[in-house]
Amino acid sequence: MRTWVAVGIMSLQASLSLAADLPEPATRADFPTPGATSVLLGRDLFFDPILSGNRNISCATCHHPDHASADGLSLNIGEGGEGLGKSRRANPENPPDALVPRNAPALFNLGAQEFTRLFHDGRVELDPTQRFGIRLPEGQHLERPLPLLAAQALMPMVAPEEMAGQPGENPVADLVAKGQITGQSGAWQAIAARIAQIPDYRRRFEWLNGAEEPIHITDIARAIAAFIAYEFRATDSPFDAFLMGDDSALTNDQLRGMSLFYGKAGCANCHAGPFQTDHQFHALGIPQIGPGKGHGPKGHADHGRGYITGEAQDRYRFRTPSLRNVALTAPYGHTGAYSDLGDMIRHHLDPETALAEYLGLEKATLPDHGLEGPLDPAMQDFDEILAISQAISIDLDPLSTSEIDALIAFLHALTDPISTKGRLGAPLNVPSGLPVDNGTTGPS
Image (cartoon, rainbow, N blue to C red; front, side, top):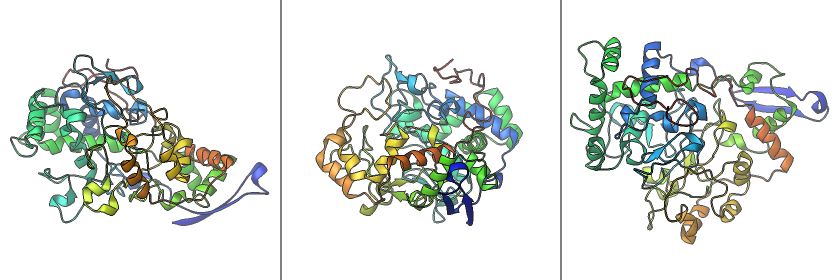
């Protein structure tokens, strides 16, 4: 860390002096340097529905460049949906059983070397005690060495509500339901076999691995990770320019917000470092909307990190997200409970009250899902709300409306315009010949 001292300009010169411990600027040295062949191959795989059980959904469906590497929804429809972003809706011929239980997180900077835990609950993380140094969820393990981001890319392919589908719909979903994920007869290798049957993919993997090497699921994941690391690197924001010495990069309001962020407001206690995250887990009391993760006595809770560690003190704790491009990645929180950045900040300032006063779903952004019954059963359960509230681990000082506005202005300074649509964007077509989500209105 190094100390920067900046003096406000124009009207702030006489009244505002910014003196804060700011992070070193993020640079390309923080990231791996993938080859062009891997990146382009990964792009096609990222957008190709061939990786899903029913061949109808791709990684890009929930993490699209047109939607700031996410989907703009609080909770999405994975399998059983059609369309893209806020236009996504239930497929009338194969409707969803439930919404995906957590908000699709943005992918910005996940390829940076400092990221050692991924997903809201950190269920994929570096761990020297595990095979190949990476811990995966129970019942799954790496068969070959992989970077962390590539290991993460394996997970959605075998999640029934995300990409795999439900048993009876396709062979991949059937294998997942039986717990057969790894090995030559597992779901991952069934997906790899599909890729091997497509001549263009087979030829391109031969360029990377040699003609004698069969395509393995880890080869697919490694290429996808190379694309994500390249496509969604966000290190060219006005804040980065300021850290590099350009005193004119931030507006007066952004300078004031930066002073609050790294000072009085206490944001940097958790949102530290070049990507504004401490990579730890905190309980913020975010309203639990959606179906939950099957935790708790009634099955509509989400115990977050506590489910991974088995420790009661970790319940309701979730990983601190990076704030790069945060102004573009609403909704916020592990359930996407807040669609407005100001509402999310206000929740931080008084989480107990915000949780108690969260009524209905008007602050969320949900797709046209066609589901029956309440979409917030946990919020109608007094005991569950009490448990969430009692776990809250943050305590911040109040801020005025003008101070909140200044913080929002500073958070906009974390937007990297180069990265907001991705560096390459969607391909016009993919080797499988399946439709590509390459626009804002849905499959082409």
